[in-house]
Image (cartoon, rainbow, N blue to C red; front, side, top):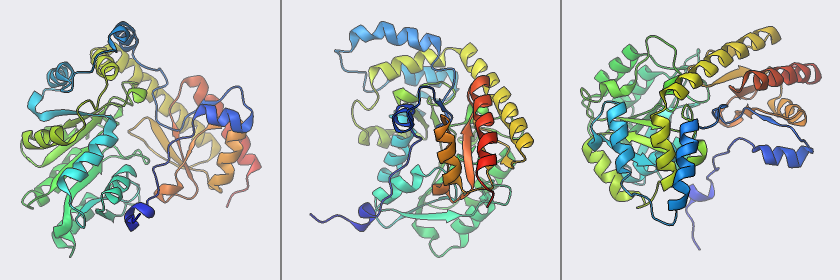
Length: 373
C-alpha cells in the first residue's frame, strides 16, 4: 500500500506524560503532574453537577448543532451565533480549517516555537509549513510575518496564518497595537485567513492585550479559536470554539462530523460558562501560582519567560533529558520542550500552591544532582 512521504515522516504530537504511566514506570504512589497546562481546581462544581444529572440521557444522540451552547457563547462573548462553531477540542478546529482552506502544495505560516499542532495537522494534509523566527524576548515577530506575506517568493502559497496569542510554550504575547499594525499590512492580500489561537486568553494580565475578536468587524479575514480545556477545567471533555465569518462557520459545519461534540461535553461547557465565580477563582489561583513559581525560579537562579498563560517556560541550563528523568523519579512531571527547539528548557504548568512547592523543591534537588552544560 502506497503512503505519502508526508505521512511516513510525520512525527505525532507528544502529550504530557500521564500520571498513571509515571506511577507504573517509577513505582510511585504520589505524582504531581504540571506538564499539560491543566486547571488544578478541576472542573467547575456546576459543570460536575450538570453532567451527573445528564448521565441518564446518554442513550440519546447529542444535539449535532450544539444549539444551546452556541447561543450561550453568543450571549456571553457578545458575538452573533452565526459566527460561532464548536469543535472536538481546538485541535479538531485547526485540522479542519487546514483541510477546508488549503490544498496539497499550498501552505500555512506560523512562528517557530508556536503550538506544534499547526504543523502536524498541515503535514498530515500534505500542506507546506513556513515559519518566522521568534524575537530575542521569545515573542512572536509579526513584522517578520507581514514581511514574509508581502515579499517572500512563497507568499502566494500561504492560505492560513496561525498566531497563538498568548503563545504556548513560551507564554509570551503580542499587544493590541502590534496586532492592529500587522492586520493593516496584510488586509488586502487575497485568499488569506488570519487565525488567532487564544487558548490562554483568560489568563492574560498584560494591560495592552486584547482578543482578536475586537478586530473581526474591521478585518473580515480574522478568525479566533478559544477552548474550554484550560480556564474552564474541561480538558477531558474536548471542546473548542471557533469564532469566524459566517461563510467559514458554514463550511466548517459541512465538513465536521455530525456528532463531533458529545452531549456531556455540551452540558459541562454550558454550566462552566455560566459559573463566573469559578472562572474568577481559577484566575486568582493561576496568577498567585505564577508569582510563586517566578519567586522559586529566581531563588534557583534560573531564567524564565514572563507568562500570560497558566505555565512558565524556564531554562534549566542543563541536559533537559537528565533533568526530566531525575524529576520523574521524584514523582514530578514537567514538560521538556525539545520538540520546540529548546534543548535546555522545560515548561511548568501552574498547580495548587502545594504542587508548585513540591515541584520547585524537587527541582532544587535535581539541579544539585545534574551538572550544568
